[in-house]
Image (cartoon, rainbow, N blue to C red):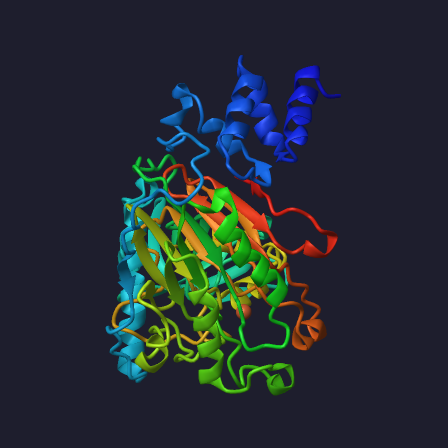
Length: 493
Ligand SMILES: [Fe+2]
């Protein structure tokens, strides 16, 4: 049931040929000068926008302008921000790879993984008293240890037996059947709290402790009016690249008032479709030359509005080494792009106007989703939470995700980011985990024959957008253009 004020708001917007977002209606209803405000907004545009958004309402009026992070009154069409500062690369393998892949390298790699995650675990109050396994197993009291998981076996009775290892000792850990929802991944680093059994052959676990993201993390306030758009898995060169949706997106970025603060675009991997990535891929390719594919990517990206800075990261389809961490594109490919582009490896942490953004293509979802029964391909966001809990982007070694044994484990999430972006699954999702904003990018490719065979239905042509100051997440949907729908920005979190 709509109130009469609500109806009046909608009628007034409609009379100017403008749609109004339900959240914007709600926001207006709470103001005592709702109609006057709406009139001001409507009159402030030379060309009316497609839709009045919640942001446009909260950006008006002296009492909300500051809190919304928009000092300028809404309605100044045209780009008013000064040139956005280039993203700063904080962590990236590019130029730092030392891996030759021998046995010594692997030993060093796992030692670094263990130490980095142990350090994070020891910062937790409940693990501060952790002892080396060699000492803990001699004690007759409650103990805490930290180890990397060598193996996980489930017994016939449904108990799980883990073998964990630290710098000098291994031991077995029993997880009773009543803890059947506790799934431990091979090669993850965990804390174990428990007691030795009577036979002194294993630790009976009371709790498995993960490094995780601390509760009540304070998110710094920053002064920025910029927004960041996320594109993922563009797969240029494939016959199933969604050219029409892509063009609609370009058009929206050029014209929509909501796009004028989008100063950054991050593409989280699989820019091109590549060649020979899966069996019979050549049948699905429109462009069968890898250089020509990147020339096309560069051409498409050059059409993005000139005020936008770009961050480009490779994925498993791209022409870089497949083993993660992946260094960025080689010079020959990089020079095809204009100077607005910052090239990073996969994964990479970049700082954009004071916000830390962690981007990872997401190959490890292939292993994590198949190892943890409560996860699904349709909800990559849940898999992202599992990675954050483990503070590691690719916890499982030796399955589908190829890992290069670098001296430092670049897959460890040592700093908690403000925003965590992934792609790869061609699905889509936005969420929040203990204050970390999670974005799973969509794709710009429709279902391929390979995905059809594997029963994977992509959710294409959605563009997540976030505000750097408020970290609010939105999405612009370009997937339903056939129904002639307008492309509005919906607030999700
Ligand atoms: Fe992809």
